[in-house]
Image (cartoon, rainbow, N blue to C red; front, side, top):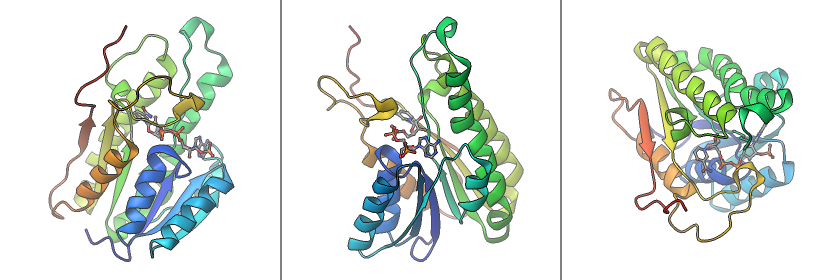
Length: 230
Ligand SMILES: NC(=O)c1ccc[n+]([C@@H]2O[C@H](COP(=O)([O-])OP(=O)(O)OC[C@H]3O[C@@H](n4cnc5c(N)ncnc54)[C@H](OP(=O)(O)O)[C@@H]3O)[C@@H](O)[C@H]2O)c1
């Protein structure tokens, strides 16, 4: 798939994995629209892409808002990356936490993807779902997050079966631990064993460059040497 001149919409592009993906796409010649709630982070991303000679635009908004999904509307390559999590046992998970996680990680992906489909099925395109190994592997204390990613995996697989014959690729990318500030947590200790946002971004670019008639529908990524759990 030719990236130069192509358009890409990346949610959660302000920092972490989404920022790395947006930068990599911009540097590869795609015109990138970043979506997130923090305008200053999107502006800094757009400047960095422009300094590298690329084209970038920002769309500030909350993907849980249906009007934002419709307004940000999607371009030929859609990267559903924005995601949130929480550490809480089920007994202590509040309705608000549950709703925030499911609305961001699942419902917004559904709305954005649905809005993008007319363009995608007309012109061909590639939808990336940034899931997590937590979608396939249960983690005690993260039920809402794991459930949202498990549902996302299944949603993506159904979508892939629906649209592949129309020339639309759908790839679920499921990383393990990535060194970002995910969940607002500051990492304590050595994070050098973790994946980096750039690893995920490089994989997105590799996947976009696969032959037009070949589809990698699910990719799992993990650190080679995970830290031993205490
Ligand atoms: N880090 C990991 O270890 C890891 C592992 C596997 C999978 N993942 C997945 O990778 C994705 C990105 O994670 P990350 O580690 O890069 O997270 P991050 O550093 O916390 O960044 C998340 C991005 O999403 C945006 N975002 C969150 N909620 C949003 C909302 N309601 N509307 C619009 N934008 C929103 C944030 O911007 P604003 O707050 O400004 O809106 C931010 O730009 C997530 O789907 C996560 O589940 C992460």
